Length: 304
Image (cartoon, rainbow, N blue to C red; front, side):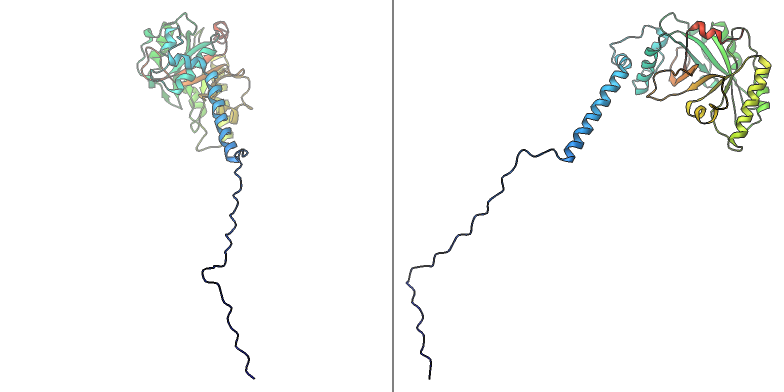
């Protein structure tokens, strides 16, 4: 039997089934008071570090900065020309060191690299920073002499400087011949500083032990000839690494040009604090030095 047909349901024309609007998504409220992010903290930390560095550096080198800006004058004419006119960071350091050592004695050292020096232009001054001593290169290695030594030695004495002669030691050359080379060229007199051994380089063809033995031989031979213990010159790092423990008891002349060192150390007798000084009467740059004491103390180091 056939199933009865189903009549489709009638819809009312014009009447639409109502549709529900989708629910509006709620936006999360923005929290405007967010905490500091690690990146922000790092940024401000860098700013603070830079600010601290600038303030600290400015205070530490305040004398040099004032001279640089023209607010502070160095009365002594000799020191006014101590540095080049170019305003470099290194100049600030020189001014700062000079300002910090008003109770010390200043000097310089020369060789043939400075050419013909006008010694009469390097006048002694009576200001805060007098130039009172000079070290002059006499010899180098086993057979070399400085071409300007005789002239410089003579005029340094004539113009009233306390003078000293130094030998540039060549590590790979015979130490006895080097001592004889110095002795042959230098005659010391009363009032002169003791002889100086300048050692700056490590050997290329021998061990450090051999170098130290050679240095001890040079020092012994020279001391025996002049009857006075020599002065030992070297860079601060070289001295600390190779000489300090085995060469005790010597008067020390230390070279250190570090921007962050502006005070002579207690154990240094002489400090070569720059190789970029300018001195009236000398063309080009020259090494400048500080003696760790006053003029009376300096004279005690001289040959009697």
